[in-house]
Length: 359
Image (cartoon, rainbow, N blue to C red; front, side):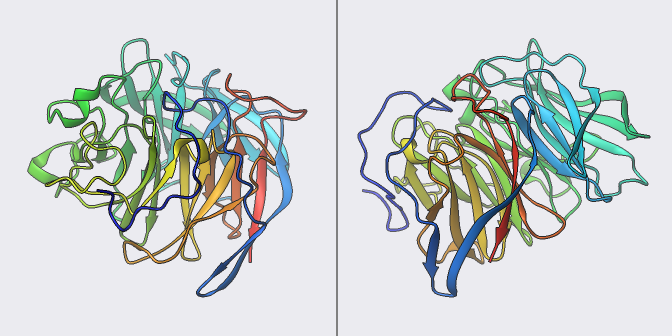
């Protein structure tokens, strides 16, 4: 029986397959959404940049510029003042249907610690590297963690520094379901590591990972100390989960809210045609969730690790596939499209970064 926390956003026909398939939900999302606190309004205020090929990771620097990862080319580009400049390429990137150069994160000690971190697919596995970024260019790439299962699909890839100063990474099952429940595998997990790639102090049993039972985590966001994660479902339910170290999130025994003993249900779920979620960000009491197949931005009201209202959809079918959302230094959201990834329908100027104001 499905849990009371389950959210069914729209009744749609169930479709086969899984991760980032093309297509989209047919239910239009509202331009604004009523909540207990008032009315949330999101407006695309401007286009920050255009002509970026399959943007994936996006991370801001202290000077308020941003670094953006191009999945297929392995290039890292700096976006500042409306200008896009390549600063270098991550070595040994092997692009595939969903693999390549994925998440980016900037060291919390930057520029004193002049490093960025990249999650990428090599020819044999997924890896996390620490790369020096100084004087506008990349250098001295060092792999700090390897052996994360890789495949053409289900590579995970999101990186996020937590308020504790440790690096969190979402992984996928590498298209091999048993990985998610295998304590000896890094697949289907959320990792918590030091900047040297070691298990962070306090991890359960001293492991590199803090949770298991995930299918394909591509979204991580913190509200204070509380971590949330977005996860691709198989045929039926995509998920938003509250992350508690040591918990098992059920895959492959559970997809969505199943109420299984010893497994943690999501706080919200969607039919795969309405979501296929990738990046998430927290701002103003909401988790904002970029959706690929669903071609919309979801806003989920949360507080203290709980959902406190109904999710609302914005920009449905207006900009195509949406991959990454991040909170900018000015409090707006930067939202990337993903129409050049081989599963979308590119438009003139794609892919682009949109600046979304919140009111």
